[in-house]
Image (cartoon, rainbow, N blue to C red; front, side, top):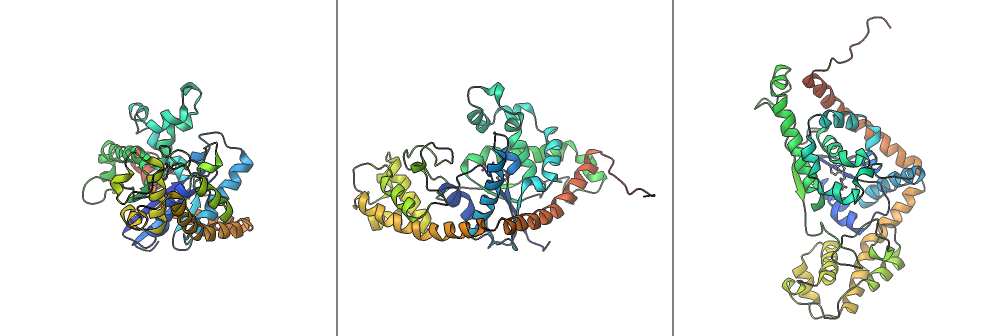
Length: 356
Ligand code: TRP
């Protein structure tokens, strides 16, 4: 691996319906981060996906679709490492060790589990409960220093830091004794920087500006899918919920107007400008006019991605080759981490047999 000063890791679940929120909140930032002095790893987290039931045939298609979206959006698979989690066994292996580091009390505080498990918590899979521990393993198997995620993943990143710190303290003596320290202290795992936010980290539903745009929303009109064509984008934006007032000329005027705020935020993010700059141009305009401009901008940005996804989908062999290549390169980074972890924890590692 080339000597980069940073290691960026992030993941997207292959659970269907990639939408504008995934693009503006995650994938587009992944593309931008390629400009840093960083090795970037972008993972399709299929092990996470099965914490909720997934139809096996649909899952295969969705893994390839997320990969196609990464490539279509501009992630360069030679520069970045693009792969799916299940092809690299170190994720699950490290998660087991971390299961023995993380505490029940820590996981009991995870709000995403409570949301996803719903009322019948007894019926949730153990994987759903353990989801954040696997996420810590994803990040720390590569000893990632930077993790771009949305606001909703903040608590999971804090847990990742807690796990790294507890591992470093619990095994401080062994880390030093076996020569795995960083030379400065006893740390083996870095305490990862979350990179949360950006103006577009939260894209809300087109039907209800108080709820996040979601792949599981029953109404397809609530989201713009990355595979939508120009007609679909136009019809969804034109039907997006608004209030009946004109656009305000300042951001303060968006307070209490969730739907208006969302559309202005989407416009700003697509164009790479601030909400203020959007309102400087459209303040006083009616939504009908603003929506027209938004349709044009959204189609201009998203249509080339949809078209490229379509071309890539026609060649699953190419997608699978990208994933195989990425997985090999990912494993080359993760395997030495796991070797060291086994050494630190006290496992006796397999030696070469003398007679074969
Ligand atoms: N939990 C993340 C999400 O739903 C996906 C994810 C899994 C992830 N492992 C990760 C993100 C590691 C960043 C780093 O968005």
